[in-house]
Amino acid sequence: MTKTLFVNGRILSKTETGLNGKAHFSDCMLIQDDKIVAIGSRNEISQALGSDIQIRDLDQRVILPSFIDGHMHLLLLGT
Image 1 (cartoon, rainbow, N blue to C red):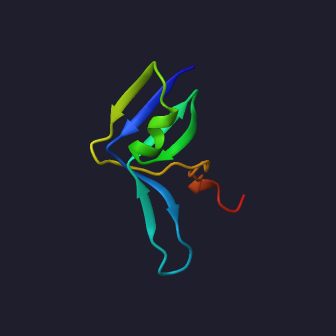
Image 2 (image 1 turned 90 degrees about the horizontal axis):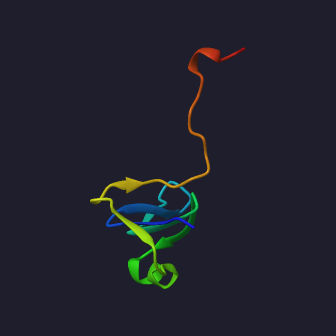
């Protein structure tokens, strides 16, 4: 069971809808066996840590976790 904790980041955790919607960011994300299992503050996630964990410092980088494959085939439009 591989666990990786990403810390010190800006991880998009939720977004309000509408033109005036605001993005909400958290600073930690826990990955276990290639799946996102928790996003929140370090205090919130620390309960799920346990042992044998890798910690990665994001150095305030922005992470946009999602399940969307955000690519397109530009030259295949209309086919």
